Amino acid sequence: MNALLTSAVAGLTAGGTYALLGVCAVFTYRLVAVVNFTGAAIGTAGTFVLIALYEAGYPIWPSVAAGIAAGTLVGVAIGYIMTRWFGEASASTKAAVTVALLVGVIAIGLRLTGGQHPHNMPELFPGSAFRMAGVEVTIASVLTIGLAALFTILADLFLNRTKVGLNLRALADRPMAAELLGIRVQLLSLLVWGMTGAFTTFALMIIAPQRSPNFMTLSLLVVPALAAALVGLFRSFWRTLAGGIVLGLVEGMASSIDSVSQYRSAIPFLVVLAVLLWSQREARWDEAR
Amino acid sequence: MSRLVVSNLSINRSELPVVSSLDIAVESGAISVVLGANGAGKTTLLEGLSGIIPVAGGTIEIDGREIQKARPGVRSREGLAHVEQGRTVFRQLTTEENLRVSLHAGSDLDEAYALFPELVQRRHVKASLLSGGEQQMLVIARALLTRPKVLLIDEMSAGLAPVIVTRLMSAVRKLADNGLAVLLVEQFAALALSIGNRAYVMRRGRVVHDGDCLKLLKSPDELHRLYLGG
Ligand SMILES: Nc1ncnc2c1ncn2[C@@H]1O[C@H](COP(=O)(O)OP(=O)(O)OP(=O)(O)O)[C@@H](O)[C@H]1O
Ligand SMILES: [Mg+2]
Image 1: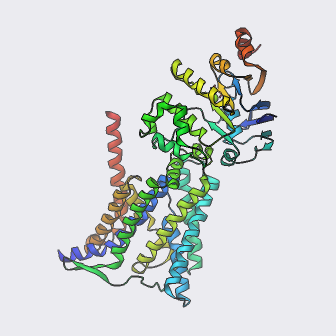
Image 2: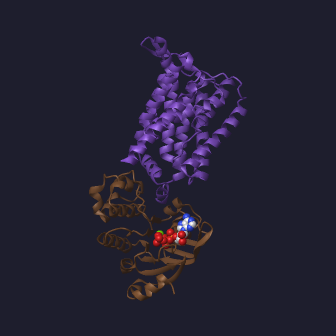
């Protein structure tokens, strides 16, 4: 029992990261109407800038700042491609484009970072925050979950209390009507991409030391992130947050049970499948009514 | 000189010409009415003017400045406002939020409420829950808050009760009287002609009549002939 709890808690850091990445995915979807498969890859690019600077002997916190700036820029660059050339495309076309971009970014990333070559990723926040039921809860997990909650709260305040947030909601509702009123649509969209890029990068920097930090595995963290977003039906920030954390916990527990641990990377897919079936059932029920 | 001058304009849709060599002008303080049957190209014309779709040739000038190559947002900042067909309110936003989106330095929510006092008690209602007439008022008021020089309005009366249509028409007349240049697209002619100054009739993407509104109003046979061709 205790072993199960320990491994569940060990899954919290991952859960917090899934939650944060998921919340960013919902933010992107709600505001610029893109299901973004490059979310984690953007953060990964920023994280590898940190790794490169750190390995070259630069002090850590300036390197972190440089990495976050780089992640923001990569986010803006991908956002530019999406708004400039695919602004009018359908939701599924846009999603497909981000998958293609993901493949491209991974290929470039692997090439630049030496493929599977092991890297020395500094732990930004080593140690445990507190003990719970006899289990150490790491600072990293508290931080990722806290960051996800902070992003959720800030996003909410930003969207509902500021003029820029109001413009973004209008843009999400009817892009052309917003543009016809003189709203700087492209600039606002790039702001969304930049903001999510920055947050994602920081989240990935925290979780990278616990994963094998290679460009591909980190970029593919988008899968559990989108699974979490799906739990929130790409609408609710809080349900996405909870979805991400639960996903991490379940993964953690699964890793301690020998018979299922090899299949634990399939868990996000099971969640996706379950949510899709469940939402289909609801749709059918609505139809029947 | 006219506020809005459109010269030799042509617009294609799916590579086919929908608007061809079209000339239209609107004076400040006046309403130019564009009439025409379904599919004549009225919506296409307005979408080309505001930049929703690109134009294939010709020029669009506001106070002598050419805008036909600019993006919609830029044209808006140059003083063009477009009230689209189909009441494009921001559905998830309240009435007041819809208005606040287009609030500019120098414009004021009170102007919107002064034009349509009906909206005051609906200010905190989600726009998707407003009636058709209220939504139409909202999109007109919203366009007004961008401080336009030229207002394009597409079929604002579609599907509305006659009493509401009369209400909207008199509000638009008031806006023109305050100096706005209005290009009013309508399928149902009589009311529009009664508030308008200059009348254009379009058929298959071309202007087939350009004249005085009252004159056309007094000769329904002529109007009928223009609509149907022949
Ligand atoms: N996206 C499109 N692709 C190809 N043709 C189009 C497209 N949209 C409209 N058309 C064609 O262009 C012509 C003009 O359409 P438009 O909507 O401008 O007419 P309208 O005068 O506004 O008609 P209505 O009174 O019905 O609103 C029509 O023949 C229509 O079939
Ligand atoms: Mg039309």
